[in-house]
Image 1 (cartoon, rainbow, N blue to C red):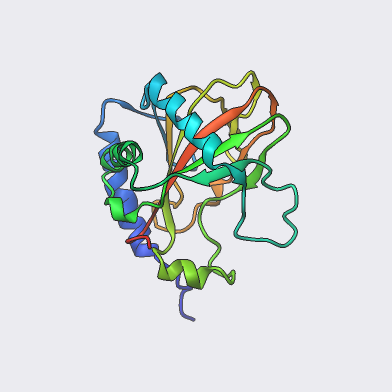
Image 2: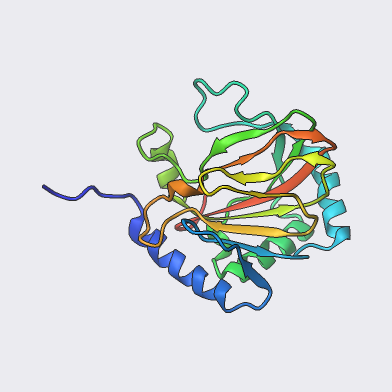
Length: 221
C-alpha cells in the first residue's frame, strides 16, 4: 500500500532545515525551551517608535477578521485585522528585516497583516498551516502552497489577558512590545505540526496589537 502523499512535504522539510540553522546561528535569537515544536523569539526586534507607527496603521486598516473555514466558526476569531500596503517603504523595510532574519525569499512571504484585540476579543485555538482536504486548498496550492513559518510581533503591553497560548505545549507567551515570535508550522520531517496549535487568548483589560507575516513554500501570489 502506497504511503500517503503530504502536499509540499519536501519543501517544508528543506525550508525548515535552512531556517532552523540560520536562527540557531544568530546570537540575537532565543529558542523557546519546549519539546514538540520549534519556537524562537527575538527581543526588541521593533523599536518603540516602529511599534507606535504600526499601531496607528492597524487602526486605519482594521476590519472584522476573516477565516478560511466559514461554517461553524461564529465567535472563533473576534479580532479586527487588515493587510498593510506592501509597497509602503516602512512596511517593506520591516518585512525585509524579517525575511533576512529567517533567510526566506521575500517573494515567499504573504503581505504583513496587523491585528487588534479589544476586551473580550480572541482567536480560539488554531494552526496556521492549511488543511489540504478543504475546498480552499486548491486555490492556496496555486498561490504559494503550504505555510511554512510564522513570524508575529507584539506591538504593545496589554493590561490583562491577550497571551499567545500554545495549547498543546502548555505555554503562554504574554505580549511584550517589540518582541518577534517565530515558529515552524511543520515538523522536522515536513509534515504539518499539530503541536503548533495556538490561540490568542481573550483580552481582559486594555487593547492588544500584533502584526503577523506568514511564509509559503514558494512564491506567494
